Amino acid sequence: MKKILRLTVILLSLTCLWGCVEVALVSVGAGLGVGAYKYIEGSVTRDYPLAYTKAWETTNTALANLVITVSNSVNEGVKGNIAAVRKDGTKVFINIKDRGQGVSTISVRVGNFGDKQDAQRIHEEILSVAGIK
Image (tube, rainbow, N blue to C red; front, side):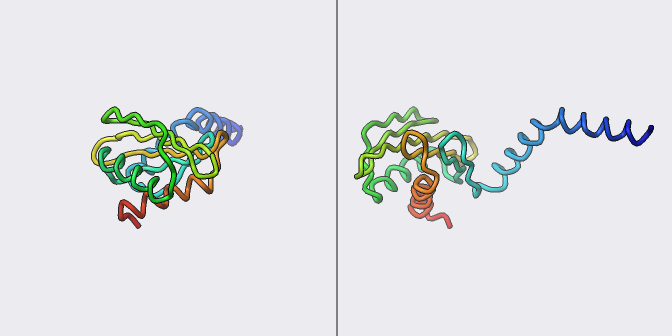
């Protein structure tokens, strides 16, 4: 009887804490890593050890290096959006957000549904321009 009760308590605890574990892992990842990519709803997101202004400039330089033409950009000082088009007509959407303490999050979506490999290629160019690697 005690084994069943313990198992039930453990399972209920895991169920209740499931969301907390994800939040804790994301927080640890942001603190440690600025190294991991996240693929969410067609966008590839990564944290960079760059202040927002530097992240904005680096992203625009990376797009120019990849011959991706910026069609619209909005820079609000702590967050910004860039809409761009590749030579083949594929749209590229980039969101940049200041997370504070010299960390910025850059999210890249290539195409309407997201192309993970192409988005990672853009992130690799951002890393190169920033001198991170």
